[in-house]
Length: 377
Ligand SMILES: Cc1ncc(COP(=O)(O)O)c(C=O)c1O
Image (cartoon, rainbow, N blue to C red; front, side):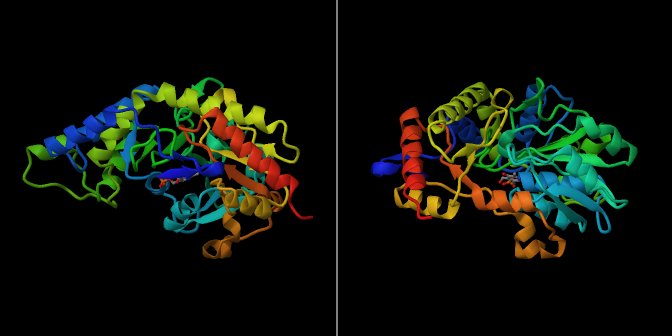
């Protein structure tokens, strides 16, 4: 994939490739390890060590991680799950897939994450879970309302698809024992497996159930099946395991994660400096000292005009995300969310990928400046 730059230059917009991924995938192919296998289990151990947690369950995607975490919690028809509308649609699809009802709430105008007070205000007797989205990688802190959630038996299952490597007051996202964390390791994520995801479970029982659910309901582990002529299908399951080929990429990438963190934070800081001179452009507050930023989302007036002008100048800008409560598929659950609707008209994602250089950022910001100053009233 290439990334168009003003002036016709182009830069690879893919993830960072460190090199060992190629050997790791070749080794897996030669060993005949394609599907779920020892490399998947090694990746789980690597992740658990990195996060300093007892266990991690690897799955096929971030969407599957949330779907399975919700199902494992017993969430289904008649239950409500509180969720921001400003997220990728797969967060909502994961809730809807369980038969539960998403209850859309607004987000903070500055950091684009849910506010604890809005979570509390949305609670009803049917609320079973809250699903905060760690927008741009910023950790969401619900500790101030944890006792309210506990008192009502409401679980927190977080969408940390964009937040691998970020922390909350020094504790890595994924290591909070009050929260079930779901990561994505898709192509553009802070850590990539090509495609992949993971759930950080909170009990051995939960881990066991999730492992059964990701392998079509089969009870036995890989090792247990090696000596057996049969297996037991003991409950619900879908096919959502992480393939060895993808796990091999993930383990190789994880070994270099410090580099990814540094590059992403540097890029963000460079954007902060460059955008300071652009009237009308407001950056998202990602709490950069604690966040490995996934993207660079700003708010601008007349966004559609600015977006078109920047694309015409060759800059690959986008919108993350069109609000979900306004999507046809989720019309049943729509509600009035004035902040999200305003943000939805103003957000603009600037190019943000590890191979961008400071001079590229300057070109993007110059194009933004031009687009903003030449827009029609
Ligand atoms: C906020 C958010 N949630 C969920 C997902 C879904 O993850 P995946 O693509 O791995 O299913 C993504 C990424 O695509 C995301 O950015």
